[in-house]
Amino acid sequence: MKKGNFENSFLLTKFILRRERVISCAWIVLLTLIVVGLVPGMKTAIDLESLDSLLPIMEIPAMVAMVGPAYASITGTFGALYTNFMMLFTAITVALMNIFLVARYTRTDEERGRYEVVRSLPTGRLANLSAVMITVVIVNVVLSAVLGLGMYATGDESMCFTGSMLWGMTNGAVGLVFAALAALFCQLSSSSRGATGYSFMALGFLYLLRAPGDMNPDMEILARISPLGLALRTEAYIENNFWPIYILVAAAAVITAAAFYFNHVRDIDQGIIAAKPGRAKGSFLMKTPAGLSFKLLKSGIIVWLVSMFMLGASYSSVLGEIDEFIAQNDMYRTLILGPAGIEFTEGFTVEQTVAFMQAAVRQAGFTLPELFSAMINNIMSLVTVIALLIFILKAVHEERDIRAELIHAAPVSRTRYLAGYAAIAFVCAIVLQFALVIGLYGVAVTSLADPSELTFLFLLEANMVYVPALWVMIGVTVLLIGAAPKASGAIWGYYAYSFLVVFIGRLSVFPAWLSKLTPFGYINELPMKQTEPLTLAVLTAIAAALTALGIFFYNRRDINAITH
Image (cartoon, rainbow, N blue to C red):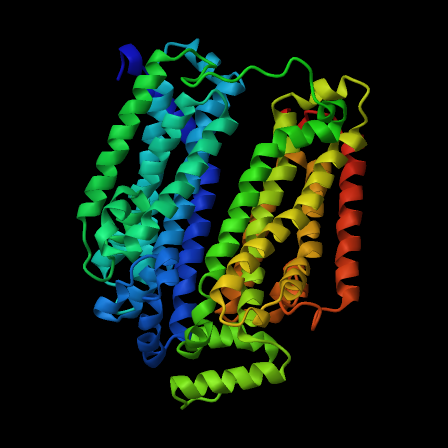
């Protein structure tokens, strides 16, 4: 690779690896901690009896559509069940990691002018894309090894070394496919926003495509077309099939070849799909800093609104069998009934368990669908944080790209500029939560035998109770942007901590004080029943104070300090 189109590809690979070392290592470490860290918690919560009772639940069509075919019923082991629960969601996370990685060093670098600088040096036309894809291979190989060894290190007898390494390799192979798709979209689109948008749409489409194939054997071809469907067919800890890995790697190679071809024939700063001409006159949104910020974030907001609605709808689809679902599983009984203070007595049949739970839940003032949806809202609020952080950190990206300086060259106050991004994030915290409520309620009224068991008002209260905690996360981010812009990425570390103590803390034993270091630790998932209104008011006041302090520091520091 020393001459021609690939000249100095390896040298560029070293450069990209140096730039990427912190971000990719953080992704790998956090993903491994979450995926491997859940194993002992779930193993403690699931005994042999509850394991046997969980297997029929995995065959419910709604569950199959969410997590894939019930392959765990073949062996009936904990390892197989864990694969059923976690493989698909882990693969989606790995796909996102790879999409961001490829977009960051291809189309984003091109927009910022870095690619042009690289091309002015003795490098081949395809060297940059080649270096990015080599980096992708290295990152995914490391991820595969770390994830596989981590799974094997848990010590569960059903998690053999071969199955564990296959677990890691499957996710690495899925990462290669979506990295290749992202590389292709980076050539087709004329902007990084468009490339990542197309990549996310492809991920969503391929997730939905595999669902009919997983539920209906006659349509399995649909699942095998999807990389996510192929990932499930490795059947790690069950049959340990390696053939899907070969197909995934071959598909990644073919898509990458197409990306190289389009990269070779297109012009710099252009996409194969021509950008649409802009309007002759700017809209009213362009007359204010907040309007411009909304214009920049509009596509992302729409994508997240649709995503939250679909997530709500997918989770709500299991409500029709929720009584049996909870009755046959100790872990879910603890997770769902525990917040209501309901203690369960062992030794009942499934029918007796259902009757006992329904009576106990009614006495506590709830219904089983209400408690299940409350748990879902608790978890989904953590997903909403991701969108909000992306929105508010757009201010940092604009500053890093020296576009914020152009805005401040006009008679625009710094307060109005940063407050515009903050206001959008604050409003989106409510809007995205509301989209989740609509998705949950829209499907619940059709899947529940008695729709009155889950009212819209309850869902709204159970969802909106998290808004003050979301606002605090926004406030912390604004403070970092104002006081320490170079350290603004640290908010992702704080988010990871919050995720661990809230999500994994539901299965593992953490000291209670750890949860109090995150705003979510002050919210009880039962709406306004155990969370004092004063607590919500205090969290809101803290969010406002942090935001105001961040804007104060932003007014006092140098613009573009992040680039110096």
